[in-house]
Length: 337
Image 1 (cartoon, one colour):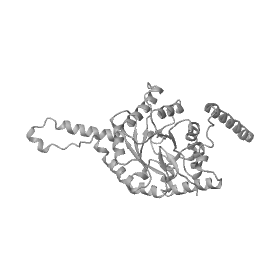
Image 2 (tube, helix red, strand yellow):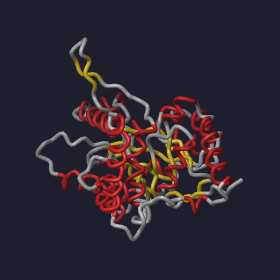
Image 3 (cartoon, rainbow, N blue to C red):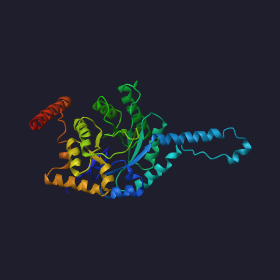
């Protein structure tokens, strides 16, 4: 068997297949099932900024409601939790219990889009036993007056706020919708991100023409969606200090292998595990091992084997591939006329 030991965020993982944030990690049993199937690490489902803010507002309203009570009525004054955001308790308790139940790193996930006190919750997650924090910055810039630079700065500011709160590693999960993905990744790398997770998938509305209304739904990813994150991982490999995590479009071991060849340190999946169950992770790991063994190549040697060469201008390299693809398409489909 090939040595699949992997370094991610400064953590040592037994292999590069990671269960990403999703419905299978909502219970201790679910987290344990993922770990038992061999994954290198488990990312918890996300705790959302809105959940933390709602609880903070509820506590503030509770205090204001009774602030003018008479002294003799203090016996019925409701106790106010001393912790700032008590509403995070269920998530924190789950992190604490799950971290103790498994023998691989448990990564907590925070999902937010604004700069604020919610980022301090990361400290509680660290104290609960999280090995790292995955910061999922889910922000759609719907304000047409907001510039690209302001959008990017918001990402850097949120990372910096969390960085000040914890000592454990932080990975930033990004969308691909920036004017210069590579430059933002470089900014985050310089600001202290230990890892970059590429890419998040924005939920996109659908239009129901029968009911004439906008609907939304969660769809599982497909392998064709892996091409975009694979492209950027191939560009960033060797250009940033941060670990590179691939996510989106992982269905089979072939998809894992492609990401590794592009330069991914770890390959994350949720959709395939939702489709096929936690046990599917074992097949992904086995498939990677068999491919490496058959070619008598180590994981470290395979990683980044097909990344953009360090001495090649990435823009020219990618454009050359684009032109080549178009020429191939014209020769292939043009002959069918």
